[in-house]
Length: 383
Image (tube, rainbow, N blue to C red):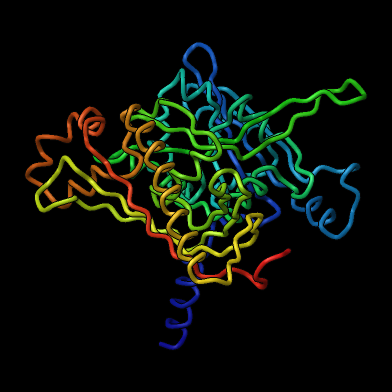
């Protein structure tokens, strides 16, 4: 009986062993993926792959000129899987997608192809974590972005991800893009990486990348327009995509300006009156900390503090209202006003959702600013 028990335990242990286990040194870690337009109905996929040994050596002070911490492998295919299989044949290690930070999609692909087809691969394949950030590459190809070197970070993808985090920009994952696109009452926007090429004294061209703005998309994920740097900060606030900002307000009659750090950015959507779906109020909130004052105001006086807070709210409310009107003209509800009405008036929404882009254009949206001045700094006034 004892022998039979021991034999059974041995058989069970053998049956539960990992037969497909892969050692870490047999894996190629994909940090970022680029998607570009290709002719004849194909798609070009590029993977930015981290070379662990070189990256470790560089982080310990090794020369970055004599080694690269990454490689970029590309291939064209009928779909993402087909192109990825071609990349795999070029590799001595198995591609590992679970640690991917971002997916870069070129402006050309947005304009010429159906971005929604990538959702099938992202949602169906369990190797995708759906936490990777979606970026739009303007002024170049996604493959070019992945191949670029950054002066401070080992990889361009790591640099871009950190730029989003440092600036308090959130909720741009592939999962969020899929959710927004499947919803009838909200449209998507994506951060834009601008690739700029400059001519150096040595007559060599140099490309640099800049996190510049947001691209506003329609229901089919086609580009409706680009916001500039200031407008991007404003729509980021009104859509709940940003948590902190800096703002400079010119004072009355051009007498200097006031610069503030804005924290705890919030927004609330509500109807102006009960059962009113045509008049919507978007209230923005924030805490303001005065960091620089070039006006003649003595901010230690309570009356001046109240005047500055009131004037700041008026100016911000005016600027946000103009940006809201610009987006409304495009018909892309990136603020989620439709989703708010969907949850509040579900029966009414059934007759509106199929043509919400047109209804959004005709909806009267009022901006209300509620910013509190929390601090005036360490000094009163410089004479």
